[in-house]
Image 1 (tube, one colour):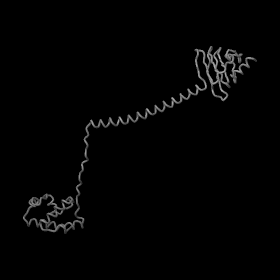
Image 2 (cartoon, rainbow, N blue to C red):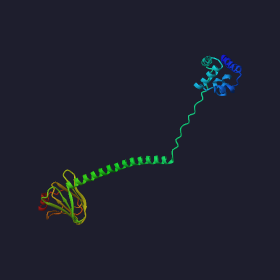
Image 3 (tube, rainbow, N blue to C red):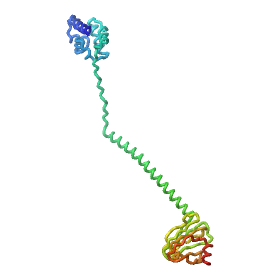
Image 4 (tube, rainbow, N blue to C red):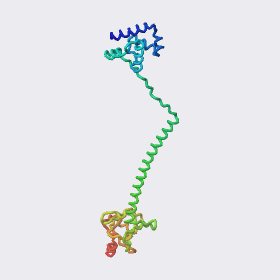
Length: 252
């Protein structure tokens, strides 16, 4: 530190020997007066440590006939040359965007989001609709395969099975619940027959009748009337609707 101070004092002496003021030297060397003052006072910590400052120091000392290398070596060794690094202030670029562009960007984003949502929504609807149509179509085909219902009159329902050798009909003389099942337990028909309502069944083997009003049902095989299955309000089960079995009841 002492040697640096001595060098700085010598710098001032050499300048004065040249009979030049600080301002005159600054004008001759194109160096700022403030920098020359800091050099002569030894306040190197306040000098920005960059190539330009070092160049100005070297230029000044060489103009005075002094060795700048000795000064730089001392500053480096003693760490007395504490450079005040003036941070470069980088101004974050500000993008001034026109309002119309902001609105346009928002509209585009909303359009993309809405379009994506719409596609997903329509896809779900289409999938649900397709599944529902398939389910309905399956039920219709299955129902039509087993039994086709044709209404010939407001009080007459016709069930057509696979075989058409003979026809069995059931007519309600009073409101009656009936259920017709196959031997495998599947339902062929199940409903409440209102008084005067008739069901016509094209012959299908192995059909079983269940009713809660045996006396309220009149069964016919073609035009042959089968005797009553029981009394009004009587529950009857496992009544075979096979034409041959029904004709046996008629003959008994």
